Structure formats: structure tokens, C-alpha cells
Image 1: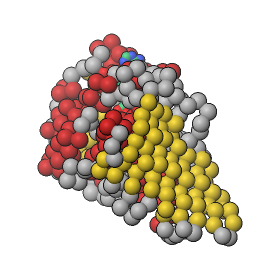
Image 2: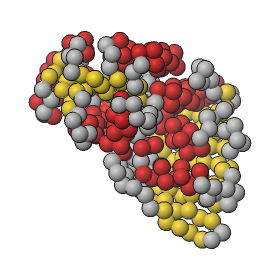
Image 3: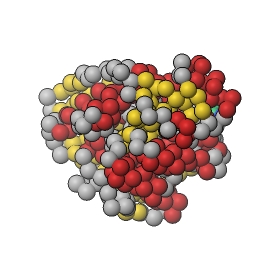
Image 4: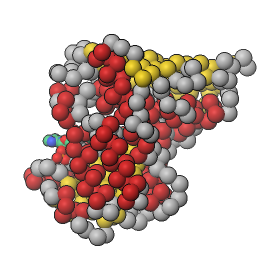
Length: 333
Ligand code: NDP
């Protein structure tokens, strides 16, 4: 199956080209960028046959069946709509759009066109997160009382562009990282956050957008979730903790793009180190997307998952901006 990559981006170069090329019979044949100079250099550097600044040209290639979108966030909607109109399957980066309306329109269009639509939430593809989900589902911690997510990182210098200074491109830690934490929460607890209180700040990096955020979410089961996201924390490390009536899970270093980190389950019986698969997160995500295009299963995170993670992030921003507790509106999903 041939793919178009839309966006000459870091994530495409570092993870997604490899993830597609690991799928037997799959190839990235087009790269689409807004810059005529960059797009040819990118194609040459990464061994891609066709380079263009014209998305329609790439989409008109009949051999192309799938499109991966990793442009800046404000471009996702129009590019996804064009790809769906051209009859392609779409794997789109998070956040799906700038607004909930954009995301819903994309997902509904894909449904109407019978196209597979995936959201590239990589964390739920990791062996670590899947092992934690399995522990919870097997009742090893009893009834979940709380989830704490620590996702305050230091944005690498090469990514300190639109993310920290361009609200119009979708900058800010909330659209960037809160969407992932929303997806992780939904994946682990198998329920959708109901209401949110939050605060956000610019703590040295954000220029006109927030670079740090803390929030507390209420879950329908009564469980409480607290999350901390930031671009400005060089040494905080990442992780999550799940606390239940019969046990606690301590997972260190797992909010990452690599299959790393340690998971410990603590119960009355003592401490147990939890092993997990160390497969590549992005290869796994693409393989599940590819399987869905052949009628097997669904993408690891599908369109409604992307709408919901964006809905939670937008609610966090609204709660932080207003100082009010806000109920999450999922737009009918
Ligand atoms: P980048 O900043 O690397 O790329 C985004 C766009 O910026 C590119 O499409 C490109 O535009 C332009 N660009 C990139 N590098 C340069 C450069 N050196 N000079 C000029 N322009 C440049 O973004 P990311 O790869 O970090 O993120 C892209 C998308 O992927 C975002 O939506 C983000 O949220 C998502 N993402 C998801 C991750 C995940 O794990 N799921 C991880 C990281 C990002 P053009 O194509 O027009 O040339």
C-alpha cells in the first residue's frame, strides 16, 4: 500500500517513516510540504520518490491508499478533509483539529466515506500502558480510586518553535500533551472524564501560550484524576500512578515515545515488578491502522478517540481560563 505523508515534520522523520516501512508491502511514496525547497531536500534525505507542495497532486495518485498527516495543528482539518474526499484512509496526528467542530467534521466525513480514520495516540500502543490497563482490568488494584499522571517534560530545543509561540498553529502544552493524557486516562480507566478544574501558566518558555498546566478530572465511577503537563521541567521525569482499594501501580518513565520505564504493583502481598512487551509504539500503531484498512479490527485510537481527547483538552483550557469547574462536552460522541 502506498502512503502520502503530509508534513515534513520531526515526528514523521524520527518515527513514522520507519513505522510505515516496517509494514510488509507498505511504502511512503509522497511527501507534501508547504516549502518547495524543504520538500525536495526532505524527500532526498529520506528516500521518498515524489515531493510536492500540492496536496491534490499527491492525492490524485491512484496507487495511494493511505495518508498520514503530521503538519502543524491548524492544517490537520483541511488536509484530512481533502484526503477523505479523495477516497483515502487517514491516520492523523493529535490534536485532530483546532476546535471540536473541526475534529467532528473530519471523523464524520471518514465514516460517510467508509474510510479508516486513526488518531496517532502512541502511548496506548505501548507495552507498558497495555500492561497497566490489563492489571486494572484484571482487578489487581481493586476499585480504582485515583490516577495521577506526571507529564512535565523539557521541550527539546529543536521543537521550541510553533509549540511555544504560535497559538494560531495550535501551540501550547494543552493541545500538545493534555490530549495524550486524556487518551491515556480513557484507555486505562475505560471511561470518559466528566468534569474538570484546572490552572495553566507560562513558566519561562511559552510566549502567548501556556507552557504548563495542572488539572483535576472527575470520572463517572467517582475516581479522581490529576494531571501535570509542562514544557519546562528538565529533570521531573514522567510517569503515572494508579491507586485502588486493593493495590497501587507505580509506573516511572513511561510517558514517552520509547518502549521504556518501570512498572511496580504494590499490594498486601508485597511488591511485584511488572514486565511488558518492548515493541516500538509507532510500528504497533501503524500495524493496527493497516489491519483496520483490510477489515481487521480498528485503529489503536480511532476518530472518536481523537474527538474525545481533544474535547478533554479544550475543556481543560476553558476551566483554566475561567477558573470554573467545567463539564466535558463530547459533541455527541
Ligand atoms: P515539526 O515542528 O517538526 O513540524 C511541523 C511542521 O513544521 C512541518 O510539517 C513543516 O512544515 C514545518 N517544519 C518542520 N521543520 C522545519 C524546519 N526546520 N524549517 C521550517 N519548517 C519546518 O512538528 P512535530 O513533528 O513535532 O509535530 C507535528 C505534528 O505531530 C503535530 O500535530 C504534533 O502535535 C504531532 N506530534 C505527535 C506526536 C505523537 O507521538 N503522536 C509526537 C510529536 C508530534 P511543512 O510540512 O509545510 O514543510
